[in-house]
Amino acid sequence: MMELIKRLGLNKNEVGNTSHISVNTDICKTCVDKPCINVCPAGTYEEDKENGITVHYERCLECGAALFACPFGALEFKYPEKGVSYIYG
Ligand code: SF4
Image (cartoon, rainbow, N blue to C red):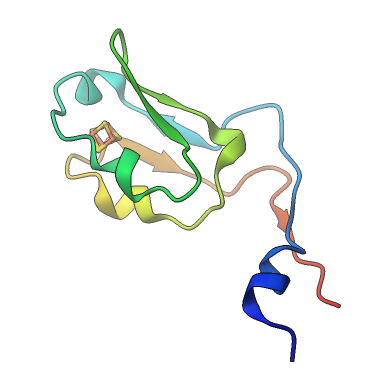
């Protein structure tokens, strides 16, 4: 059986043209701790002084951690138009 780290390395993420993550920046502007930034393993969320948060949807691994971490329900997530292809050897 192939090691987990090698299997994950076979994942192929095809990025679509539109974000699959919607964010209510009015809420994010008032969010002090911004836990979405710290729980996301892919660096999808970045603090933005003007809008509260910037979402780099193309980095998303679809783990869903930020949805659970956000205490205010500011995020909406749908599956990406192209999704992630898993190519197992
Ligand atoms: S998405 Fe949620 S956790 Fe992240 S900054 Fe906005 S309100 Fe805060």
